[in-house]
Length: 469
Image 1 (cartoon, helix red, strand yellow):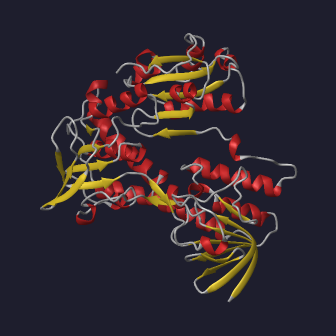
Image 2: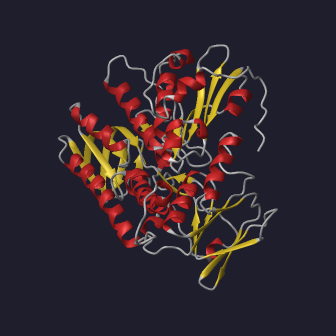
Image 3: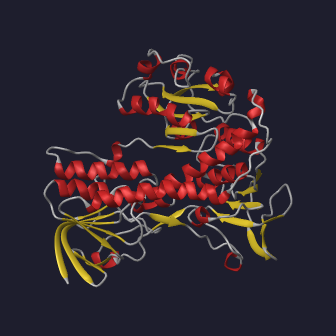
């Protein structure tokens, strides 16, 4: 059967449902197609389930520190019930997903299709044997874990960031290949649940996109909890050892092999664009399968947009939602010219201590030709951190010495994922750093040290000189 709409949204992630309801509210007939579960990565296999599990892991960790705060626990040790932990996570996820589906179902002018959408032409898709046509298409299909062709990977059982969320047992020894955001969050989580954890990273350090002192501070905090970090693993090979998995790492130091009970592959993500029939619509992609878009999220084909992870312009819930805002504003608000290039990159690493990041690192600012001034302070000199007994990490802000604009910041420490928003707001307003430096913040907080740091900026720099380890 053939059905015609004003607009069709493919994918029910963070951008799709909001765009569908916004268009429907503007009296346009809209169809939204989802092949699996509404909510996308964030609700189903990303933010919502992982942060729920991290919260449980934090409780387990805090019970182990109770005596440090003068609290005696008669039982002496927390017992982690992974089935109960997973049940709590499922309850939170289900509530979020159900709420989203109910909202869509009750939206006038919006039709829901559950099935796999595939382009048949620039103006039509097929879904479950039906042909849907429209003048406008909005692709929001997200991504999935990348499975690299490591030697031996076809011969060993392994987990991904999606499948590990269903694990009902506690691994005795979890091997994690990949020392970036996803891998490190699971590493700390499972260490706090009680697993022995080894992180294997091919690069010479964790988090290669961060400044060295930030990456080293993250590593130090993880190692302090008993997580083993193996860096420079240039020759990763996998094999079975009975019921266990062995990873040959061939690092410069340490044993050339590590054997564990479970293996997690955390080496990036790929877009879900390989089976959409984009070639039939003439939509261009790059070599990695990300859909090419312009500054307004338009593809090369008139009437087709790409939003969220599948366009390669951000791999976060907040960037996907901002994609929706850009497209909706430009389509529905007279005179709007919102652009992708206006977005300031920001993100967080949700380990303890959390890392909040915005804009350029010191290294990035210098290699782009900026003359800069840098302010920093260790968390040992932040009263709020001392009071909470969480003094790992540092705060760092990079300022352009000529324009006085803030170029970027990193807050690695207790509350860093929240405090960073003070800097984000100042950067979005294009305010000189003095606006923040002269402001008064509430005591005792982490944010109150931001004006202090900006009032103590160092001398100008024009060349990159990494802080010694």
